Length: 499
Image (cartoon, rainbow, N blue to C red; front, side, top):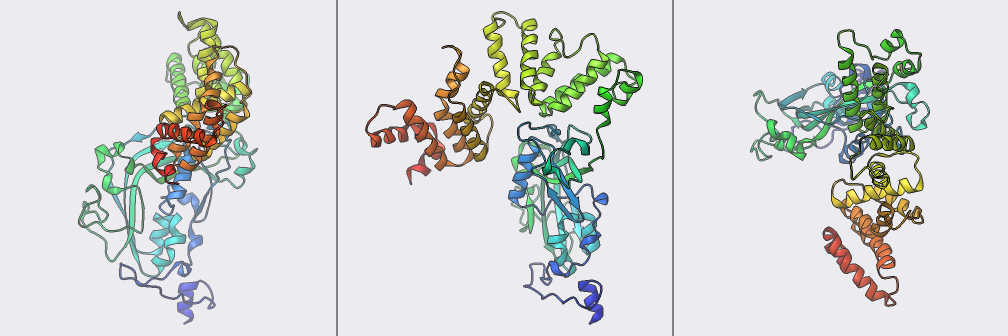
């Protein structure tokens, strides 16, 4: 009995023998997690490409929302990984980097079998807590996965000093450098399928393979992954595996090199000289890298690339409004949270490059305000913040983008906060439209976010005072509002009418 206790409960003879639960589909006993004694065998440094199969739909959704605007920072210890959702700046998204567009691949079905605890730790370290007991009880697992594409970070490294000022980053050990997208399915089996092309979970058959079976865990839909067309199918775009990199101690040496006096040593330290390349080629590559980081909403990374470009082209710097590259710096300043500086530089560029009839002062101001609405983050004037939020709501209402219900609510609060911003004149449509049309934009935002109840309440709150301010009959006013609401929000019309 002592030997049995050692096997199941660890050192000593004090552990209890776990009870056997209901027999599973595989025919194995239902021994659970308490039988697993090797959970501390996981060393994160040996598992920097973990599958995330233990995440449920909520975990995946939160992760995808985080990764949509910022590089994801985590605490990774033993067999556990915690996403540090507060390790970011909500006012300046992408401050610590962002993720590039997906690089799609043709993909292929891959298989992974688990028959003992050692294989579980080696292949699926984050699943030790959920599957360890079952594996110790004798169950075997087979996993199939398909990688359709990969997203990598715009930053090759994250340094401790970069995140030191944010208390939400306490305990951070790694950041997610890469994300594999696709689909997976894992389930308990009595024996492993020998044929390489055979699928247990309906891969390549639209989910209708007669051999397919129900999986214990899954992400995406393997039945929709068909190699050359997987990039077209939403069901094969779920995050399934991560590439982690440890956070480096100290400060970013490239940032320090950029501050140093210009010399061959400092330029080399900053990574801006390549002896094998012509100077013009290196400068051009820096601009291209800046453009890519801007597209990924990594403003600081973009500015770092342009700083490197400026050292290579001291007579045509990106800070000079007469140089077309300055337009990229203006946009990157806005994304990096330096809206005012970005506006100043953008105006200089337009004054030098805008052609009639859009080169008048009035047209230049309108063009700059369009940029504010699209790119500015961080601290802004009330006017700029109103333009920014109204642009976001207008795009969400039109279907160009989609905001969460919380983002819709936050935007609504900002609109109300800045309702007293005065238009410059009767032609100041940026402000006039923001304050006049939000009765439609905000409910439309909630409607697309799936919160029809809130969409109707906000519509009533905004439509009646703005469009029917003198109507005495409240019931009639609400009836008119209802009719207008249903015409604006087809998706919510039936749901709210039934209440």
